[in-house]
Length: 459
Image 1 (cartoon, rainbow, N blue to C red):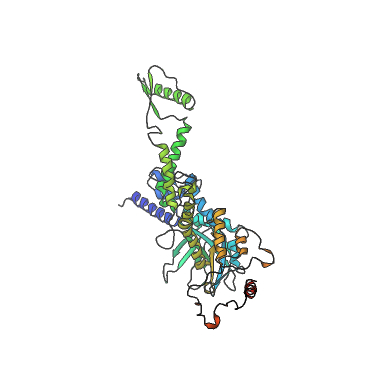
Image 2: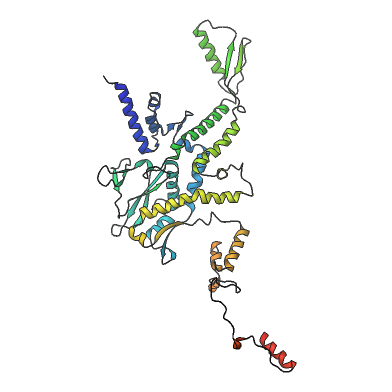
């Protein structure tokens, strides 16, 4: 006879593994799941409680991870930075670029993707979904006649399941399962407009991105355990654990239970100091906060979690290694190495999913205006503007626009200027001068005629 209990256990483990694979650490609220963990089903426990148990014993889910300040700050700094950058739909044609304000997606990406949410809130939410759970999804609403995208509706990542068809060409499909609504399946067909905008994080198979919360659960679990230990330490009035050594034995269990109940009833409150009988000795056990390197642990946790999100610690307000001389370059590194990958994810997925083949061929694309993040102090900006004006990179009206100022009146600021003593590299060489092109000489004659000739030349 096969071991029925073993078969059931293996089947439930398989179900749990598949659910974790496709749900990515999704939480189900208000469910008591301790039985599954105690009886050897950690994957099912993780589904019901919202997280796999870490080595520290803490269940790590999106909700529990966001309760830690460093995870919250890392998620906040990246998602909000992407959200407040102006997203612009442009068109490049014959080498010239312009704002494609006539395209419906210009309003959607710059102002509001639908009537219920702003562009900033929409991009913050999708970027946060990708940061924490590896994937962000939005439904694309298109015009039936042309296929042009006109609206984007955000979807919760736990309701969307990307997969491939079981047979045939094995096309990419997205199954959307929302409560109270029949399941919907969207198929990605080559050459046809897509129905789902899918922003992926770092992944393995090209279909789904990894959940940082799942992959980094050991680091995050240790941080949560350290927070819990700190809270318990202060909840017990800063006391260390202790044991009571008694010089006499209890006569029976009833006497023992009475002593224990009386002790816990009186001294369970942290502020009440124990009054010991001569035959009772209190002995502290465990390590002190200093011995456990409590402060050093909390400092290390900051940089440890920041590594998972590729965020410099100074951006989560840990200025241990930041100085006045390097903080500006640290901010520049954040734009180059932390934000740029996310900007390019948005740009490429927008081009792949939202734009039609005809729009891509016409030169439409998405770009983010990140100059506000690269904005220097006032003196540095003025020096850069001065060099740009002198070399015809900017005109005065463009510089005034950078500083949120109105153009000069009567079009006086639309002209470009360059220094007169400069010429183009490889340009026309000065022509050799012949006898007729010699520098004029003053006429021969008396001094009055020469003086008059020079005055005319100067005038």
